[in-house]
Image (cartoon, rainbow, N blue to C red; front, top):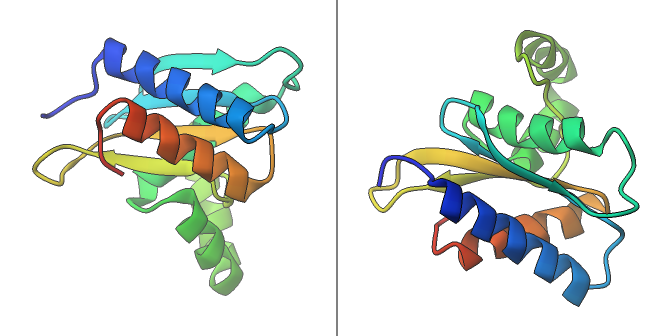
Length: 140
């Protein structure tokens, strides 16, 4: 598998939203990007604040840009804040150094995209992203 299909992206979003409701999270927003950082699908729950689309995209895009989850980027930001701030300015969609942006890998292990979730705590955002990826039959 070399790319995420629209059907898989929509299934990942549905899975993330379902997990968010199961966990009674605050309203979330979910973005699915392909390996090139292009938006495939997006959803924002009712009541989700107006900056959430950009945050979800930045979590996923940052993961793609640096090749690690946004959780790892958050850890990197503690040790190397100047680097992460500079990288965020270079990445067109930005970088949010907090959990919720997860790389998606194909059957061969290559990165084929990313899912970004925002709206609740970063740990819960990541749980929703992982659930969405699993629901689509993809690997994180």
